[in-house]
Amino acid sequence: MFQILEPVKGKGWFWFFGIALIILATALYSKNLAIQEETKAVKRAERIIETFTNELPGRWHGKVGNSPATLFITKENNQLSGKIVYDGVEEDLSIRFGRNNKDNIVLILKGAGYNRLRGKGYFNLDTFHGIISPDDRSINGSYKDTSGKNGNWSVIKCVSHPVNISGEWEGEWRMGDNWLLNPLGTNQLSFNLSIEQKDSNFVGIIRYLRKEGTSNVKGEICENQISFEYQYSDGTVREYIGVVDSRGKNAQGSWIHPNGSGPWEIAKKSHL
Image 1 (cartoon, one colour):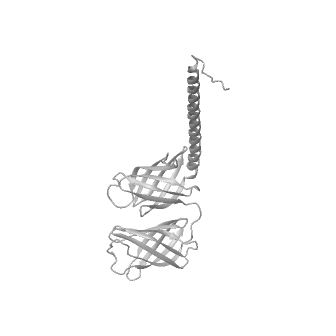
Image 2 (cartoon, rainbow, N blue to C red; image 1 turned 180 degrees about the vertical axis):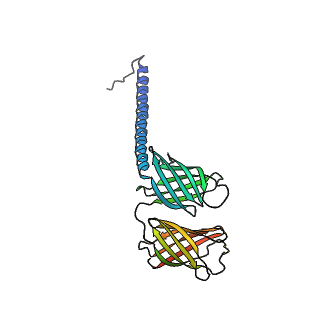
Image 3 (cartoon, rainbow, N blue to C red; image 1 turned 120 degrees about the horizontal axis):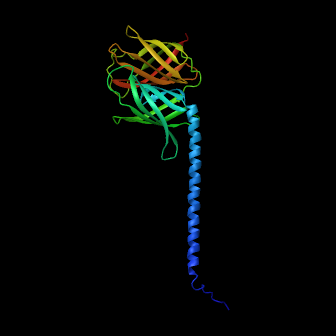
């Protein structure tokens, strides 16, 4: 026969008290575990930021929207600051780090002032957000200026000796989807380009094949990325950005002008 056990009268509160202690202990353990994980995450983020702080200083090259851009990052007293040059403006940047909703470390560059290198008018300061690649060699992200204009930006770090592009080149630019009135006249699309390179910078002369006269060119090359610009007689500037192949024999990319944009390509005829 089975004996039916009955709870000891007056002792039921022990059961509730025990259960309450178990629930409390579980909650405290979970909270402590969460605190430990958060502490680990903070320390991990601090290590990543320390690495970035040491690796980011230097010259970077890429584009903001469709415009060629050069980013300079410096380190002083373990604090980063920078300047970015694009669209004829040199913009001073404060630099800090944050996290996005995926818990990734985000580089935040905020415009603090500017110096106009060409052109006129007010410049709306930018705020750039970027994700740094695992090898610390590239940054990609989005930006927004104080007027609400936004877009994407990307740069790569200039660390190795660039491809040699000194020499004589020939090429052409083509009309894009945007309408453009060619300041040089119709069918002036083919040109010769002489380049003299010194380290990462170069100067040159561009000559259109069906028109007399030349324009001075200046530009820079970072890794295999190239950008250059020249000015028309009316003061407008055409900017080119693109990629050079590993042999330094061919390059192609896109150009931008106040009245339009489109593709371009050049091929090397001879070395200087």
